[in-house]
Length: 338
Image 1 (cartoon, helix red, strand yellow):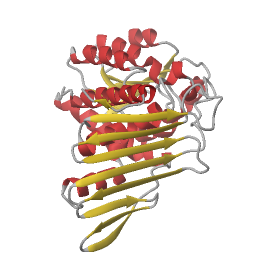
Image 2 (cartoon, rainbow, N blue to C red):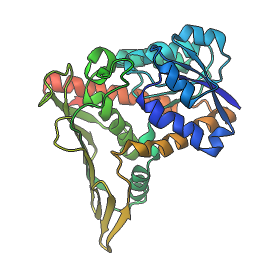
Image 3 (cartoon, one colour):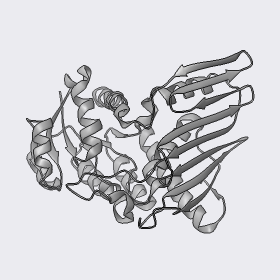
Image 4 (tube, helix red, strand yellow):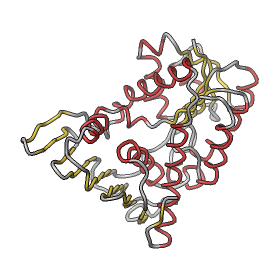
């Protein structure tokens, strides 16, 4: 039985992480959350309701001094990730961490060095890779089901930034000091690891970051990014300034195409078209199953002694792409990934 602690007890934990740990039989028999740390004393009541047997702490050092842990699950805003990663790695504790790796690329580089210096399992919360949509897309693309990919386009429409827990700072996503950026960091990070999952590392990155509607935010509400690969482009269009919440994906190949409209994945090729029913990926209730699969992979890595840095590399590359996108927007030109 792996003994773990959750660091940060915000909305994604209450609606995603904890239900995943509790609802999956394989996880319940292999993992126990013995403690929670959250800087807000108001979270104590929620912890007691959802995890009655868990101890509660309001600072990391006291948690680490008092609990013997096999792993931690870091679910705090990005500005604290690097500090918590360093503290937990120094104790030889395995780590799950919400995206992105850190609040900035330099901080991510330093965190990566520390993690590579330890024989630890590190798994970032790149949970979209476990969704039926992206697993289906990857299977079709990798099997040549639409030929050679020429163009991929992902669109994410939101009305505003998601709010955080009211017990701390519900607007933290719109404050650069906490989130490290706006919608590019908050949502673009997902599509940057999906880009690697499907196509690998791009050669060039170009981006435009703007505030179109929410001028009270301290960060951009819209990001348009192009990732250039040999012979293809991937476009990622993100906004908190839309009139409705929606996701769509289009992928064009030399002998077919894929299109997702929120409820179905349409696969077209010379033989015709077929519809594959899909849940709405903008519905966060879907995350529970994705997290459960991710956590089971983490447990398997710990139990088998798999200390590969493949997922750390993936998370670090996400940070590099975020950094390049921000600098591309500032400089008004495409930048090389190097």
